[in-house]
Amino acid sequence: QVQLVESGGGSVQPGGSLRLSCAASGSHFSIYAMGWYRQAPGKQRDLVASITSDGSTRYADSVKGRFTISRDNAENTVYLEMNSLKSEDTAVYFCYANCVSSIGSFYVYWGQGTQVTVSS
View: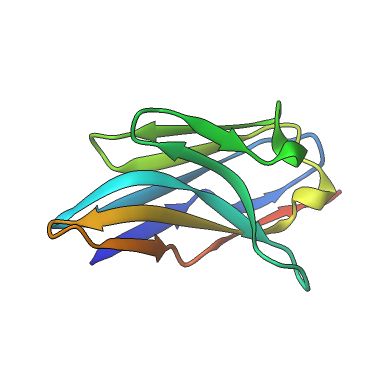
């Protein structure tokens, strides 16, 4: 079992910045990818950014050049630096982790979600 604890959400004005963190804990698992999805009211959950254990990153087109994902493998923590925030970035942001167990089974774990609100 892996637990993901998110922090860093909040309210900010357009053009502002926020930094999200997600710390993973658990035993007998290896995490090979972590990242963030977001879900706005009435919309589906979409990928924002992801990063693998070797540092390969992927971003949604809507956040390229504004958001940066990074990862501390030793601490099993992933960060999302969000700059130049827009009202359309308002959503609940969910951290996820793609894991493989000690016996080779694959799992996806999710955090509880953190609200990001961009409004003047």
